[in-house]
Amino acid sequence: MIASSIFLAFGAWQIILIVIVVLLLFGGKKIPELMRGLGSGIKEFKDASKEEDDEVIDQRTPTPPIDKKEERTL
Image 1 (tube, rainbow, N blue to C red):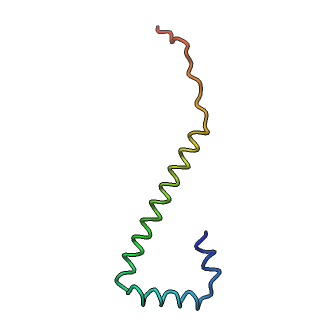
Image 2 (tube, helix red, strand yellow):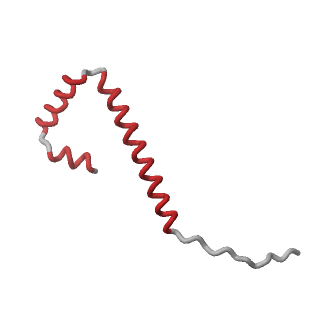
Image 3 (spheres, rainbow, N blue to C red):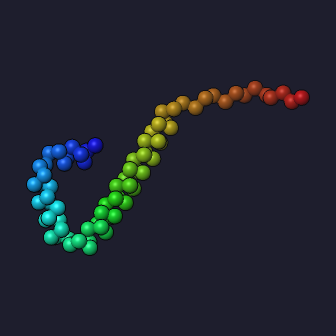
């Protein structure tokens, strides 16, 4: 969502210029390695934020009281 709104703020020529500058700075062989590192970093960040959200939800959810009645055996 955020990435698409960022690209809408730029025109086609500006995006093409940014891609050309990145190619000149890093070269064609280095870019896939950089993107892999960026992708794994984003994945780790999402996983960590999801774990944090799950912990918050677990803390909000009340646990049912334990029934202390003795169970009857037949």
